[in-house]
Amino acid sequence: MKLTQRGKDYLKASLYGAIVSSIFDVRLILALCLSLFIAAGISEIILRTATTGSIQVELSDPHLTCFKGNSATESITVNYKRKRFVRVEVSAIEVPDGIETIADKSLPESLTFSFKPKYSGRFKVLTVKFEFLDPLGLFSKTIDLVREEFVIDCYPSSLLSQIKPSRPMTLALGERTGRTHGSGQEFYSIDEYSPSVERKNIFWKRIAAMPDERLLVKVREANIPRSLSIGLIRTSDRGQEELAWMDLACEGAGVLGKNIFALGCEVNLIFNSEDKVVRLEASDLPELSEAIMQMSLSEKTDIETTSEILSDSDLCVTGLRELEMDLLALAVARKPSLLIEDKDTFPRTIGNLSVIYSGNQDVTGLINRVLGI
Image (cartoon, rainbow, N blue to C red; front, side):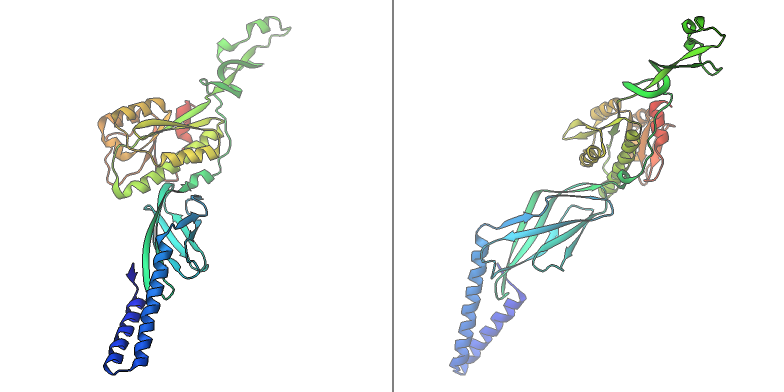
């Protein structure tokens, strides 16, 4: 409990009035000053009793979602005793780094805030400092509220990009049919021979029964993988640049995932969290969005987890700073990789299977390298 500036002026005026009235024996002024002291005491008691009991704070939505560049709105309702007499204001609001907070003062009877994340990713924990004022505005009491369950999910804008559906035409390895001709094992159709067709596909049994001399070949069906895995590897501390780097990693995972969906495949995200390798499956855009949000909270990888993620992923997302390590640079150079830019980095090797990503590069060639087409 502390005095406001108005309270200090109020008590000073009352005190000076009481001193002057006692010196000059002006009883009416003395009585007035005494009543002012009594009114201040009653106002302070109302504030103290209103903030001593339980104070309930409700959020309109503890889990906000938006796309990068947009904002999400939150309304806060505070329930407490003596609500008719005691006024509450928000003196400060603390959110994770990378989020801009704007108070909406157009609604004086509600506490409404607009949160605008600068980076994509998942942001947790909300701390609000409430200031309660007595009826006369003489005293104030500050109470901190920490809501651990508060979450803001800022989806990468790459999830909004339009990608044309496509199918690999010559893919031979996979777990299910691609419903188009290719070089798989399953019989697809019969066609006439051309010089570009391998002789092993000539359909000799059918030709022997043909009345003419046409050559027929067996057309095999293409196979596509059921899913492709994207592994995230981060071994370096980036300090203040961490949010910007993870933002690009989320954007890259989003554009890779949408291109993989366009092939008709599912997406697996692999990353390190709570000292273990996490694998999240996504078969549609909402599942991919949630997986990317969880990936944004991933932790650094050590040698063991890095090796596991590399071996289990079809392509990886990592930074140029990670390639300053010789062993990691050589391992990543042998796998199709999306490399996130870092300032003042000197990678040992990059290789010809990687794409350096700054937010607008085409990644279809990278996925084609994974599929071997």
